[in-house]
Length: 414
Image 1: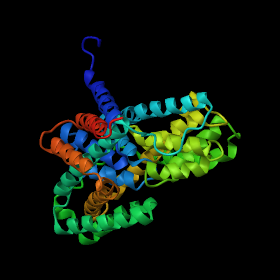
Image 2 (image 1 turned 30 degrees about the horizontal axis):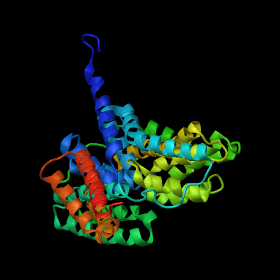
Image 3 (image 1 turned 60 degrees about the horizontal axis):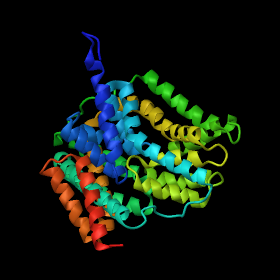
Image 4 (image 1 turned 135 degrees about the vertical axis):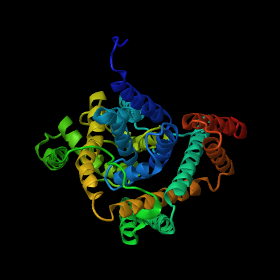
């Protein structure tokens, strides 16, 4: 208990951040874009920590950086709420559940000393149905997020044109150059500045985070030193070398977890068997939270180091660039916002964010559900529960998973 007269206001925000992100870490299935839908539902609609314009700005900022966009958005949201420790607690709460599951799976494979089958771990029966239900729930979450963001951010014809163009460009980028989807946001910002769409009702607002330029320089310098210097000085087959490998992966990959996993295969192919790699790849699709927690699995099964300590080192390595890059870029972002037409560029970025999310809703989410009428129905019901019944996202996720498991059992009895 706190002593009489203790200041609980300094503690409550930390606990609030940790509790909310821990719940999200246990229930946020569906990949990075779905995570943004869950975040919007939790922090814009329920907690009212910020509005749609500020949320879209944070998404835009994190989307142009390498690394896991949803995790970076969570770090910024936590830091806005409770300072630097809030950012760390947000990352910990959102990451810990899937990291623990992936570590346990990796340690089990290592202990068994046998390769797991490649491909999905979904298997058959109720588990397969539950995973299909989770996918449908994620589709409903993203649908609600896109509709609400479009309603609040595409409030002028120019913004609507940028959003529609962003949708088309994002679809093309997703098919032919997924690592360059950030260019869609850059184009949206440029178009907003040219068309001067600041009159759309999106004020410039406050900076996403209050960080000094000294902090930015320190973080940027540390990022460069670690990225360039660690591979040179790290002893082979050491924890330092393991950290350097995953630091590189977290520093150079645009496009989120679905891009970093193939990239990692090239980096660590000699350290993990192909069958084991794809077993972990399948497991990463079946757990909540960020796909970057695959690093914990890879560290656990690494041939040179392996074990729980290696899992922690690999996990720290792949997420460390996100903290350093955010600390380095946010002050620069804040300076750019003071330039002429900055509000117009920001409005264009926000419009492009809507197009980018809509593109992912169309492909792969809608295309995946296109041949599953039950999945479409579950997604629409999930969206209705979120939008009209105001059911919490975590409850919708659990309901959809339970329905999927029950429906699959009834339709495909053993």
